[in-house]
Image 1: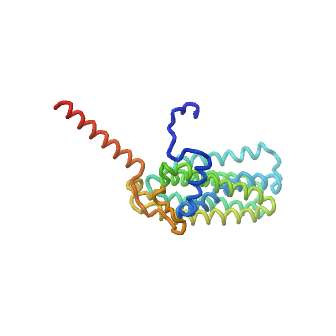
Image 2: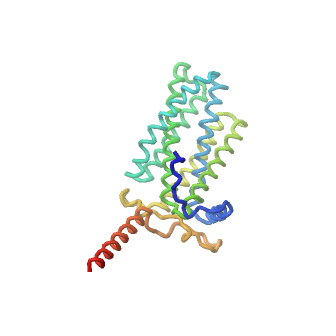
Image 3: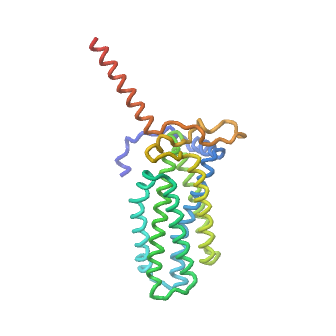
Length: 277
């Protein structure tokens, strides 16, 4: 579908690779971006645990060597992710970021608890498929809600001039968490992987709580969009000794577009009146 977007305009964040790297480095003095980093790392750890540790556990510890069986089990993961993609975005818009963050915590706890029960090897063999199906379904839900939270947060908080830097920052930390955990997890047991994954994701959720308090107001969901505290170059001070944060409240992109539309409409009316005179 990208082939049909040849006329898509470039943002103000476009430019040379070196220029984008310089813009990305400026985020190191921005508290909101630093608070979002642990959540991005936690998302990467979650992906590595789901796609690396769980399949390895199925093969090595449950002696499930059938790749087709693993694929069938992960259908439940896909169903959970699909169901969550229809739910959590609407929940964020209607009830705000806190409800989605609580859902993130709840699904994480479910995945951790069910994984731990499987690692104890005390579940009857007949009940293992059911427990595994529920585990993977909640894993899909956890994947969906975390993707929803990060996508909406970066889209709402980072203005056009820093949009690419915001997405790059997220992907860099996500890949650090994913590749780091995927590389190191074979060195310790499945049970250790469970607790390390839970701890890192919980740290990310706690960090995002402070990010949400900093960058989103506590007003109603309808007013939240125009009360978002954005990240732009205006909030990134030139003096690195000063710690900038999202303290400047500006209009959202939709608010700006509405203002521009009204201005253009008034200009058209004025020009029409002058032509009549």
